[in-house]
Image (tube, rainbow, N blue to C red; front, side):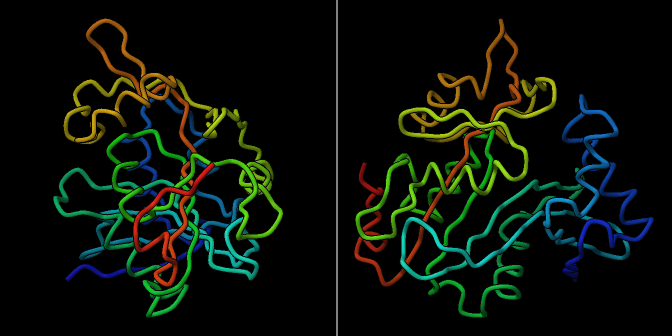
Length: 247
């Protein structure tokens, strides 16, 4: 049975580091060693959860959890940042849900599913965003202050978190984009299986905002990501009804 291991990236063994580096090279073939080495350091405070079997890394997911004041509640609540998710090409099962469930139980609470939580992620795949909004039904477009929360706006909240990491942000009317530092990646052969959402309006949004670029008969991950900000609270009427946060 696969085992879960949580480490700081800098705590990886030499063998684990080599395997995770190979996974990065699989997912980001156009990036240089500096980019990968940066992700294999602990500079951003992320933990990495490894899914391993017989010494082989089947998958790796990056997470960071803080308890912060947010635009949604007056008190501090868990804020989980979802980073890169990498999977061995020979592993068929899902990685992010298995590692995410394990990480949340270990770092938030065994009963994390009934805790108010904010999720943050930089997403360049329409399919991943489709999954994100199932988990966080109350997701932002809204960038203004919340009437029921404190005075901080979601725009300020995102700037405080991502700006400190040096991520270049572009704020639009109802969403925020991250401008990343790798060259566009040809995902034509991966589009149908790994990128395309069942919801065509999500695909259209990603294309219209330049996150996904079509050039002739080719499709590219265009070094831009949507910053998804979601809030879930089982005790909230809005969260139970799955109503989007109002502008």
